[in-house]
Length: 115
Length: 110
Image (cartoon, rainbow over all chains, first blue to last red; front, side, top):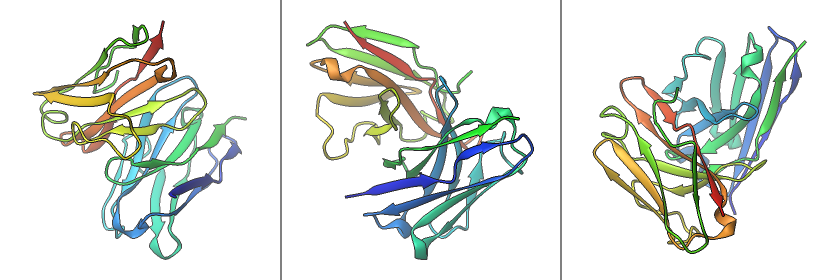
């Protein structure tokens, strides 16, 4: 059974930083792209970032480029999202999704940016 | 304003067939496989259809996808009350170099 579990969310002040983690099991983690997708309260899904199998290629939505960094550790079957210079607009549930077509999703971790 | 355009709402009665559209352009739907996702309130999205009409194991064949040019659609046949959810389309856009999601369609089963 495939399991994807995010962690690291919480309340952070504007301008602060947070690091999200995603642990995956039951799939060949090293053989697929991994992705972060977020959903602001009451809003639709927004893709945030993706990273290739070997980490050699990364893509970001414009609104986070330069502030967020996606990374992965295939030995630990883990995906990360380092988020810096957070603003209220980054408040959302952040989902980790596996594969080229976002096959498997975690339950999400809530990030709240507020003073 | 989403790059992919979906109707904000759709509805049908049990047993009916409902079609949810997703409109894009040559740089996204016209060039890349589209995927559809189902999301219940308070829950994570679920992968429903991909590659225009491939279903992951466990997804009923009542759900089917199709594409024509720069538009795509999700068809739900034999509508059931448990199909009431939000539905999103998504694909890669090579002019923006980003993944794009539609704004989502809230399906109500009357």
